[in-house]
Image (cartoon, rainbow, N blue to C red):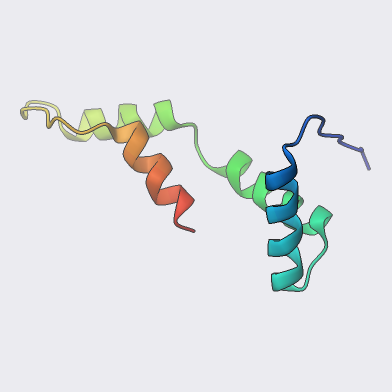
Length: 77
């Protein structure tokens, strides 16, 4: 199994990760692996945007920042 090291993690982020892992009763490594797996398994945003664009073909575009909206939705989890 490979090892991954993340450098220059801000102290406040590190503390938040530790707190979240403790609240869920798991290790920091388990939390990071679960989160990383979920992000990597999700299709890239540009693929999703192309799919949405194809579905909307022929209709007037809405003035919505899709990437910003998706980031906000993902942050709510």
